[in-house]
Length: 45
Image (cartoon, rainbow, N blue to C red; front, side, top):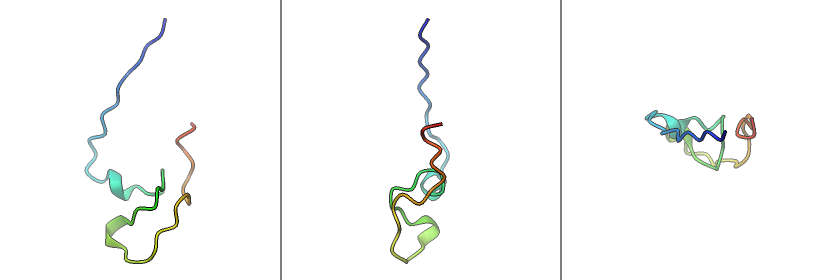
């Protein structure tokens, strides 16, 4: 039996959680150039 669940992201700080999945965003208004891909690589898990 296949069970699919849609997970809604409702955390207002999701954009600041760059350490989980870094797409080159600047958290908390950091003005330095972001480095895409430097994260914990948890998406495959």
